Amino acid sequence: MKIKDLEFKKFIPATKIDDKVAELAAQINHDYKDKTPVFLPVLNGSFMFAADLLKEVKIPCRVSFVKTSSYSGTMSTGQLKTLIGHDESLFNQNILIVEDIVDSGLTLEKIIEELRGLGAKSVEAISLLRKKSAREKKIDVKYVGFDLEDEFVLGYGLDYDGLGRNYKDIYKATRSTEEAK
Ligand code: 5GP
Image (cartoon, rainbow, N blue to C red; front, side):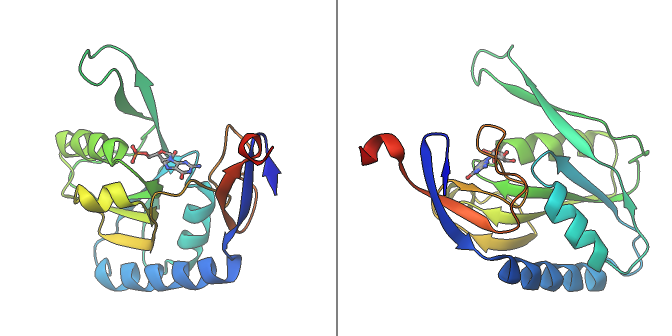
C-alpha cells in the first residue's frame, strides 16, 4: 500500500488488535473495579483504540476527550504541549490516559504533569503501542498493547500526514517510494 511517498505493509492485523484490546480491558475491569475511573483519550490518534477499548470496559466510568496543542516559546525544547478540552472536574479522580502510541514520551509526560497539577487522585496511562525510545527512557505506561522497535506505523487511528487513520489494521512503513526508484 502506498501513501504519499511511503510504502506500507500490513503489520498487526485487526484480529490481533481485537484480542489485545479485550485483554487490556479485562485488566482494567479488574484493577479499577471500585474506582470509577475517568478515561482521557488523547485525540486524534487514539479515537479508534479508545472506542474499542471502552466497549469492553464493564465497570462504571467516565470518558472525556482531550487534545494536546503545541506552541513554541521555550528555547530549550522549542515545543511545549498543553492539554485542552477536559471538561469534567478531574480533582480527586482516578485518571487513565488513553494513547495510541508512545514514542519519546514527551507528550505523555506533559499530560501527566498537568493532570497531577489539577489534583487528580491517581494518573496512569494505557497505550496500544510503545516504541523503543519510550522503553529506553522508562516512560511510565501501566498498560501496553504491543511493543515496537523504531518503525513508523499507520492505521487504526494513526496517520501519515493526515491520511490512513481509517484502516482497521496497523501498517508499517517499509521504504519510501523515492528510495525504490
Ligand atoms: P511522543 O511525544 O511520545 O514522542 O509522540 C507521541 C505522538 O507522536 C503520538 O501520539 C503520535 O501522534 C505521534 N507518533 C509517534 N510515533 C508515531 C508513528 O509511528 N506513527 C504515527 N502515525 N504517529 C506517531
